[in-house]
Amino acid sequence: MTVAELKDKLELKPLNEVYDKEVDGVFISDMVSDVMAGAKPGALWVTTQSHKNVVAAANLVDICAVIVTRGKPVPDETIDMATRAELTILSTDLETYDLVGKLHAAGV
Amino acid sequence: MAKEGCKHSWRMTNVRYGFIVVEKCYHCKTERSYFAAEHTPPKEEYREGEHFWDYMGSAQSVQFGLKCDRCGREVPFADVLGLLTCSGCTPDCDAHVMSRICEDQRIWVYVALCYQPDIVSKDEMGDRLAILSQYFNERIRTPGKKILIVPGWLVKDIDICKGTVLKDVGMFEVEPEEVAS
Image (cartoon, rainbow over all chains, first blue to last red; front, side):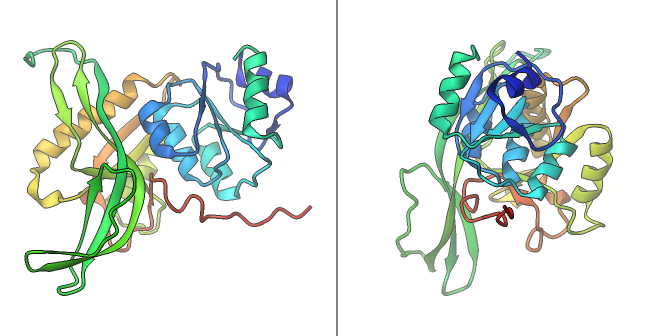
């Protein structure tokens, strides 16, 4: 499943361009150190964090897209950096637990 | 065990979660930082020789090494405090110049900051950072994208650098402006 297909299926709100990438797994964490040490390339990163550190960490390990949950506002600085890195940032009002349930049901 | 001519395949090893702790001696004003692999950062004031160390702050971080799956060679990175991304605060800073040039070619530059940069030779650090770059690049799936880890001495003045260090403190303190409804 691609990021675009997932966005449509789960009605996620894109905050920047949706880049054509395949989703390969999910990584759930609010710590960049976790992502640097544990996330796999191509994974979807689910987090409540919206600081631009998220983009730096995601870019380092080649995350396919980031979903910010709980409707947390994402600063323009983060979105701009994500766009430069060709990283899609998606937003949802869902709690992380509920989103992950939907991801699992969607077969991700 | 390490073999000459090995086409290395690196994986992360000796992963330890802990804290980067920053302390300052209230006697001579020297500052230092180190990695503490503990559940909570050590905050007590203590004396060590002529120094009286005060806790200044800490950040959650991770320490790791790399090991080649083919020849067993291990490369430690215990002296690397963290990775920093350039924010473009100083136009004539080498790290900034390199970041801008590389970004145009879809090469993303991260600066490796070290605890005690003066005790490691530049050649040795350069070799290890090339290996670290290789580790991340081996995992990149996005076509045409590359990661480049460069040494901290490219930063013109680390004391005034406004680059973003990849760490887990301050993220909870950065609150974006509320979006008007």
